[in-house]
Image (cartoon, rainbow, N blue to C red; front, side, top):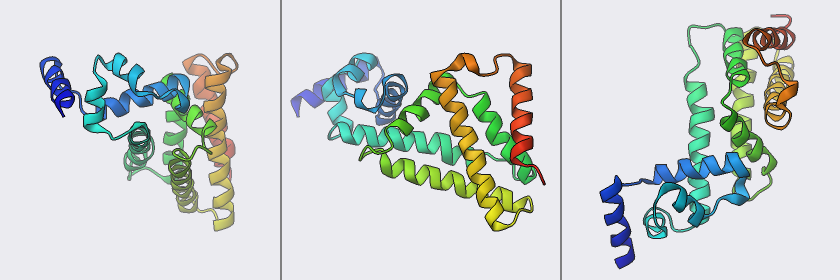
Amino acid sequence: LGRYRTAMGQEARRGRLGAEDWARAALDVIGEQGVAAVAVEPIAVRLGATKGSFYWHFPNRDALVTAALARWEQEHTQAVIDGLDEAATPTERVRSILASTVSADPLRARVEVNLLAAADHPLVAPTMDRVVRRRLATLRALFAGAGFAADEADRRAVLAYTTYVGHLQLMVRMPGLMPQSRAARSAYLETALGVITEGT
């Protein structure tokens, strides 16, 4: 208990770190190096904190990874879905989703690519399964709202999502192959959207 009090006293002098600070730092590490690289001591160094500070907020590393995944799910799935313009048409909402991918921050893209690579990890698998199902369900509903029959809405949802994932993969692994200028990215987005929503 004494080491925890000491750690929290040090944090109070610097500006106390919260569990969200640790989760954000862990998410940054996932983007930079992958899930396996998440470790308490290096993140403590990154934050200028102590291991005692970590254990004030989390019982173990797994809890930190879980918190980082929850933050990612909230920011990059729930918040995106909640932020879709309700006044926009379903096709315009699909455009918004794809546009956010084309202009994605490189670290955000790396986080998602590294989580996909770790999708069979016991801590990552439940989150990835839930996120992908939620995203596909949202896309399916948008295509149904655009007038597609259920089976076709399913196919369009998968097509849109694989376009999204493929874009992120190339952005991270082979960025030189992707459109570089704003005009080229805009033209790419229009072409992709045209193919995915053809028939609306």
